[in-house]
Image (cartoon, rainbow, N blue to C red; front, side, top):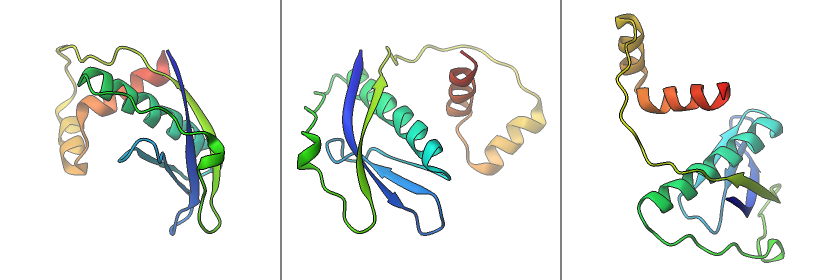
Length: 122
């Protein structure tokens, strides 16, 4: 199912862009370039909707784009995303020990990294 929400794109202090969705409190993303920020915003939107669906929480109605304003140098844009059934399934995977150590060292979620990599490939 396709979802479309207004997002606010703002310049990040350290460069790039920060993206927020006023209708989806807590849903944020960022990117080093505008193109990357937009793609990451689509991903964040899809994941947020899938999370709400999985938790059986209501999906907020999107506000009209004219009702959303950006402060400072930011701007408002519509972002669309296809939300899929995000219900997690367990799979057993094997990775080299050095990769597991690097994942832990960087504080990454192995599941999230794997999901992101798979999403790019399919």
